[in-house]
Amino acid sequence: MSADPVQAAVAQLQNASDGIGTDKDKIISTLKDIKDPALRKQVQDEYEKQTGDNLNAMIKDEMSGMDGDLATALVGGPDGKVNQGEVAAIEADKAMHGGFLTDISDSIADSTGVDRKTMRTITGGVVATVVLGPFAGPFLAAGGGAMIGTDIGGTDEEALYKALESCETPEAREELKKLYALRNPGRTLDADLKGE
Image (cartoon, rainbow, N blue to C red; front, side):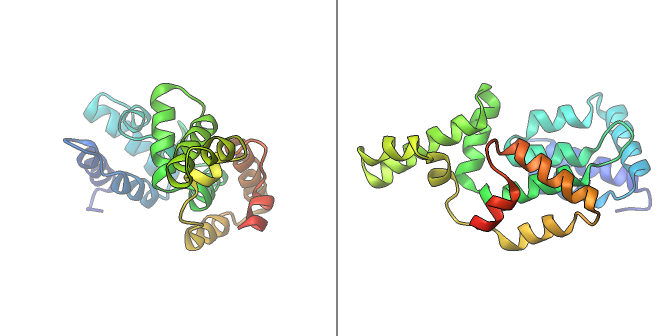
């Protein structure tokens, strides 16, 4: 960042969100680079001052799915503090269950108001039908199409390890587990790690 880290961060966020297309990776990396909650609060305030829009509104408008969740978490609260357990839960979920089809499925769910788990099951059923034939798709969708259709590609182990290692305190690790379970109803981080 430049001599004025607040102005530099605001400029990067504006450039990443202006024009045709959104540079999601730039938004996320810019927000990750802000380590100090006081500085993050200044970026929140300055962004709103310059654009008339708050960061969360911009993210909601420009991003969806797990990337949108991650960027929203990285904005932090009104005090600029980030919940590291929440960030780690999103990153672990993305590492184990993210990917092209999950991004599409979650984007559709976010824009239509449909539950993400339901949309992933529908997406999984459609993909299974296309790949395995018309009789297999509905059967597989009913029995876990969300996993079959949207988890193609396996786990990004490096990203998963980084997410887990980012929770340095027992409290942060417990928060990670709790928030991961909230993101994945009926599942736990421990069980999913054993399954990976």
